[in-house]
Amino acid sequence: MNQLAESIKSEIRKRGPLTFAHFMELALYHPELGYYSPGIERIGKEGDYYTSPYVHQAFGEILARFIVKGAGHFGGADFDIIEFGGGKGLLASDILKYMKRDHPDVYDRVRYHIVEHNPHQRKEAEKGLEKHRHKLSLLSSLSELGERNIDGVIISNEFVDALPFHRAKFSRGELLEIYVALKENEFVELKGKPSSKEIASYLEDYGLQLEEGQELEINLNAGRWIKETERILDRGLILTIDYGYLAPELFSPHRMKGTYKCLHKHQINENPYVNIGEQDITAHVDFSNLIRVGEHAGLNEIIYTTQGQFLLDWGILDIIEDGESGAGTASGKDTIAAGTLFLPQLMGDKFKVLVQGKNIEDETRNFYPESPLKISFGVL
Image (cartoon, rainbow, N blue to C red; front, top):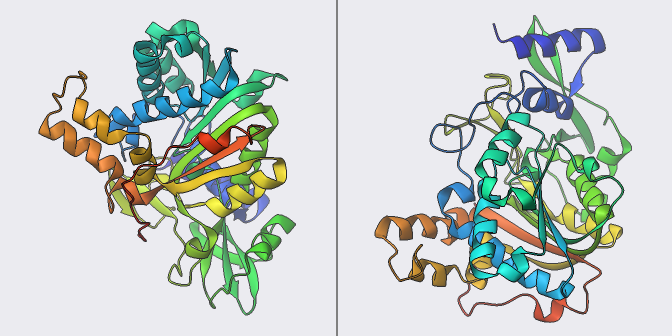
């Protein structure tokens, strides 16, 4: 018997049908039984999927270069890095290692905060980052920063896609929400009126034409996250890396079933009602929403591009050429792994990068470098 599935069924019996967002929150973040709660490795060969820091450490070095240049716009003052969903600290380790080695002056100024709700992962991060312990702050939520505001850089790598989202379906000229209910003690989906005005009005600004029967995901938590991060940022940059699209592509009629998927042992399926608590549930990010909510909150868009182009712009080819030792000794296996991060049709096109800034308008003109090598956007 799946204990978490039975717990969710019990809640449905008591409260009635749940929004998919609430179902997903329980499936992923239930404090004892959720997918992200136990001390089980979810990333890497023994887990369910890979993220860029697990593919090659060049990813962390590129982000460190980005941060170092950003720090140059804050004079000699202290500044903060906040990483959401930092897990056991692999990306933080790569970033801090590079900064300490090549930019000790910046390293001396930085304070690195990992926001990770999973206590087991926070303990792993504390152990793995022991060399940088005096630079490290481990938080279960952003609220633990208190009322303080920061100058610095906020990083989100494959964080937004895992925020619980609502699901909806366009039927007979109106947008209906998809709810999770029970029939003969099995999970079923029902359609009904949207659970909030935010869902009903989500697409109004986009001017899109949906097809009859088209399904889509609406991630209200993504917009709330942008507002939350903007509020604690006095001056600085927000770097969001994830798979997704701008709204016209994301909600195109050729995506009739939306983009949500489940991941279990490196296999993809489209059934969120099996392996509950043992599989990830995710959907592509609506970057148009992050941009529009950010603009309303006081953030300006600096660039939206592919991960491949971003990595090229910040010098990943130089890193590959130099090799890990900095002496031109990159192995063939090492080169292939790094190439996975930026090559088209691999992670380079699949993932997008959004850079937003606050109160740094005058500095952004010369902030972002451009590589002479250009990668065209692909459609996956």
